Picture (cartoon, helix red, strand yellow):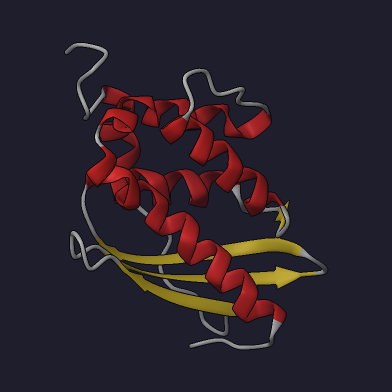
Length: 146
């Protein structure tokens, strides 16, 4: 497999991880759909004192969406809700800049570097991050789908 191949081993491995199931009584939930590819995610979060304490995911999507959801599930638990903003900035850098300056827990996003050449697949990777932002906004407003 070349470095340009879209489905690198790290993406395939991440996509193969079991995602945490939906939560009972989440603080916030969001369902996000990509009309372009048909991927759909429901993402639940539980928040306590500004920290995400649990994540639940129901995803019907491609390998890239699955890998991105697995990264969020691995990294965002026990992190402040504000950290998702950093994640989105770092992901945008991976998908758009020549040399992203990844830092901290988000260095894992370098697995998505091969996706930058496939602009039609960027939304697949962004979908779980968008759902996370929407779930955080719902939690802040006291809304949940649970």
